[in-house]
Image (cartoon, rainbow, N blue to C red; front, top):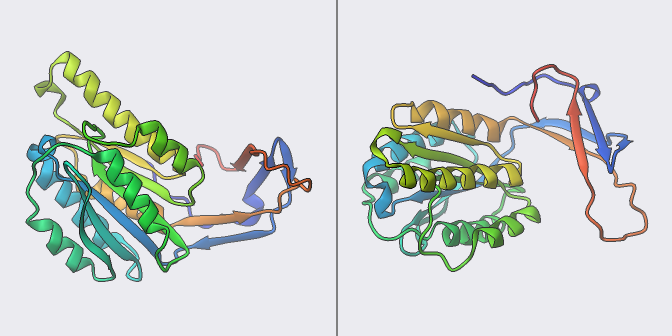
Length: 248
């Protein structure tokens, strides 16, 4: 079981830009308020796991920063806005409690729309939490469109990937399930977030609490780019930490 590592100092980190070490000019550990867009999959394919999703959502809200604000959108045949930015977690919880499952799955469209909305919120930090099985059959945008947008976005995506019960799914169908789970994990990896895959008998509350902790416990490491020619080219940036078994 992994856990967040707290208490590290500036000297524990190294930053490389295109392979060249850079002096760290900004460093602190942050638990600042965050604007969090929650994407909850209530499409027909989630009918058997919807209560599982709602339990994860409840645990996540309880473990979040009290000064965060939240919005809730749903995934079905089209993106659905359940509630706008609110600071009261009970409002989100109550809104989600009686949501039914049904319709096709426009997951990519919903995430794409949620991504654009969360960037306009009042907090300088923003994130998306996606609770889904990762499958899509009704979106206009493609997965590659969304991944390209994420590369230039400051929003981190955290995902709870619902794997369900492998024993109840046939071989070809399980391949589809795996592609969906891998898509959610790719979203998190591309954006600097975290993804947790959950089977049918795993504890959704523990996973959601861990993600809330990951959002709250972040090191901010800043440096000045050595690119003075304003070339506009991408830089390869590496951040390393001098702790064994630590993963960035």
